[in-house]
Image 1 (cartoon, rainbow, N blue to C red):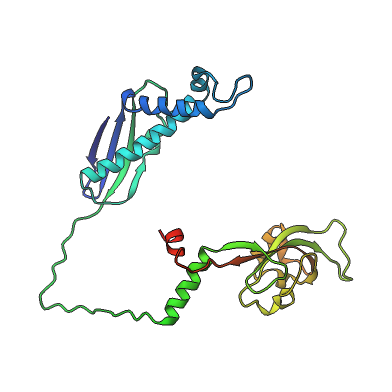
Image 2: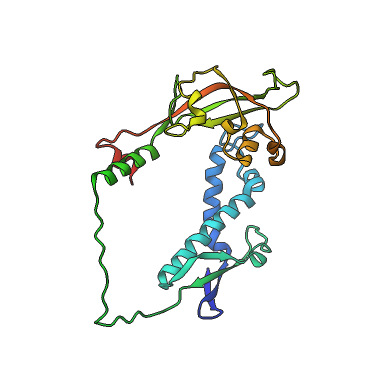
Length: 271
């Protein structure tokens, strides 16, 4: 393997990575052996497909995967070993890399654009003054953080009765002015999320149960045209002209149950 860096200017460089067959052959062979153990193919027992057939069918795919891993590892090591201060990550030069034909036993060369961090010095006078801010951590801040993190690692569970913060999954069907289902009208399975606390136009849905039916206006279904169009499965321009009500039949009720804050919580979730 040969890795070289060509500086374009003070802030830009191109890294060229040249791979020879001995750089990737062993990795590819091992990956093929591992794949052979679990591949299933008609006419062969699991794990008994001939290696030559596995190589013929999956060799290029596995080669591409191993080359990508090798490039990632090599670039990271090159940056670390040379103590390069870069901005973001190296970006592949598509016009060069896309032209590479991956075949076992061949040499490959890949190019990557790399942004170099500018060097600068901060000359602070001894007379300069800096403000030190003291952050006050009160009980309210702690409680809000605990509430947020336990919800983040919580689990979704079914509920029998809807409440604030629940997600209702159900069917929307279009009604006419007499409250009858429009033949061939809009029918869509979608969701309604109840805020915590629920908004005024969702108050009727609090305490809803599975199979309950509610006749809703478009304003009760969504707060904006794009959201309404998505929920009803129509284009935004079609949603703008909708005046009919929609019957919403509740199919499932999902609730986010916060994780329990105990001695096991930090070790299981906050790594």
